[in-house]
Length: 102
Image (tube, rainbow, N blue to C red; front, side):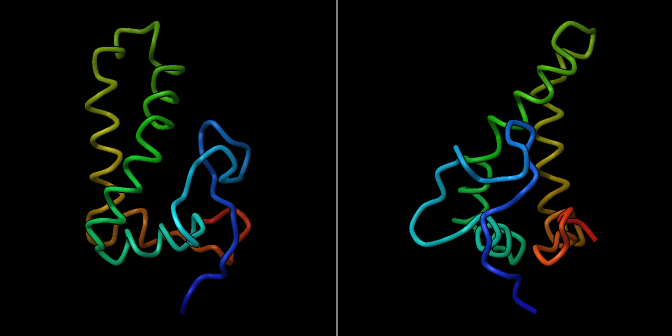
């Protein structure tokens, strides 16, 4: 079932919106997420391009002054591996739910 076309996603640098993230063309955050979850290589690359800085910033804010700071790049990579694996995070999100995840 397709997700409703709306402009929201929970992101570390945003409250719950895509504002500030440049999604190309007519897509919304949810159409990008749906396409990336379905395996579109170009949409997965776009998803990483948009959210890698957000994820890195989040880990930097949490781990920047701890011994884990040297693991930030690996943690960001692991995050995207979890998103794109079969039955991964992107397959479990739902734009129909206010919190996004089911």
